[in-house]
Image (cartoon, rainbow, N blue to C red; front, side, top):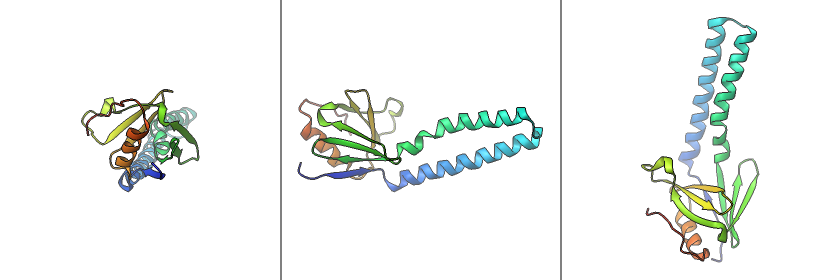
Length: 149
């Protein structure tokens, strides 16, 4: 291969995630105000609000960590998350590249399956996506199944 490169999510995806967070924030503020106006400020109402926030936050919290980038090196792929966490996958650990089962109609998202059970999600719109596929084909010794584009 000879050169290292970075595979990043496109700007439109980052804007989508930020817009989703802003909508989420506005919705939660609206519901919180509505709960207090409707029933007054009581301990039970406060428990309802905390429970509501826990449920909604658990649903949207992974979006922040979904924004990562990949660093392709001679030894494998480094997944670098926004919080600084780093996961390294060697080339020989990659088993296959396939579409997500939930997104049969959505053709832009692929899952890189690894032997340890971890998956790396990539989008066809990511910068250097094709270079990433070429590197995987070059470095993986087995005939890796890559679903048709």
